Image (cartoon, rainbow, N blue to C red; front, side):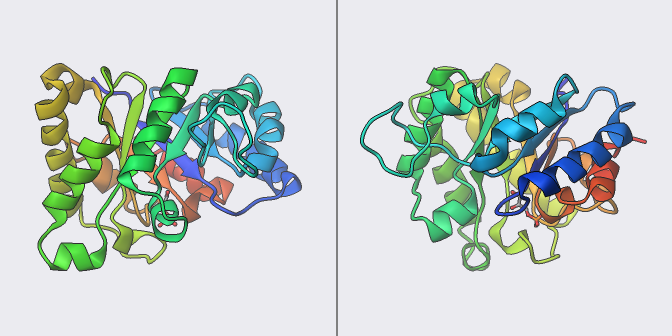
Length: 249
Ligand code: 13P
């Protein structure tokens, strides 16, 4: 039995004051939900503050990125150990926006994932094909490559969550259909079982991301290989994020 995960990726939104309003409104709305892991991922500058705001609640704290070195002359970077120190338990790695705008590759994703896990964080590793790749019929190759290279060298997936985010569905309002998402999740689980064995592939959580909203989350979550959601836009409002966390009601 895989515990569902609902994670909110705030991207480049929310000052500390705005985050306070969001968290204070969110906590009462999700306090009765059981059996769902809830994560929020604010920008670096307010991680510590959001950690204080979520306090002893069930909500966990994630960063949106990290570097692979622990310290050194790397101006502008943040290390996994520093994220732990700021109160994070999780870090998102290799989001498609980082691959697209900040030149991240499967190799950098792999280095970051290994460093994050070695430091004691849980890594939310993102994969997903572009529209062009889907239309060219190379989706399976792309996902296989991203999963294989991104997780290369790991001996266990205990500290890994995968997020499948088709690039064409992010911020576009075009959600993958339940069947499209399930097909991709199934493929990812098969690749993982070949690389890490059936026990690991049975246990690893695979989240779907891309225009997840209160009105489509239930259908997505009803699919056998979809174990949660990585939510962008709809995680910025307490009502919509709470409704997604409450998908089982
Ligand atoms: P949207 O939910 O805004 O489409 O964003 C998805 C995403 O990229 C989450 O990481």
